[in-house]
Length: 267
Image (cartoon, rainbow, N blue to C red; front, top):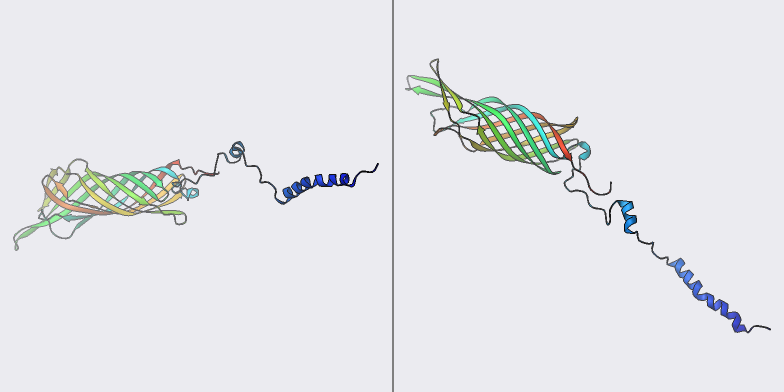
């Protein structure tokens, strides 16, 4: 018996929804399944978006400049001293000058790649030679009084760090506390005669500024430091001011870094 024509049209009609769904899937494929948190952990080592780099990590870590948190160093070099006699003394003439030797230890904390703070201990000594005249205009003699003193300076400076090429340049400024080691020794010379004295030297404070340079060498860095410093007050012995001091020093040293900074984010 022949089938009714409507029975033959039932099969193509039933296939239309399936064909339409297939066509839609081909034209608009569904998005890929999102990574699970477990898969993401395996891929990136963490959940969520990648974290930014540590802002305190130095961009010049490959050069070994500013790549650590803490630096310790030692330097030494000549210091040209200028002594201006106080108005409280009879000394006259131009400022007296002498050359001393500064030896410094320091610890530096690298807060950011561009900013660090440094505390120092500087051992130094002063040798001022002041002169004056005694007598009348027609009959006068010149006499000299020499002052020698050992002291510690404790500077605290702030540095701005820049990285041109393979070097690091750091302009800095700060202040220091001068702590005398014992008394100041004085000797008076007049007519080939000498007389010695000892005075109690009072602590004082001062300001400083300068420029330091660093270059990677071996496990640490070579340091060159040029600075100018000046006492805010005068050297005071007992109840009298004797001179005001300023200095220019050029020292050479070496520093080691500790506690290397780690940059966060994808390795």
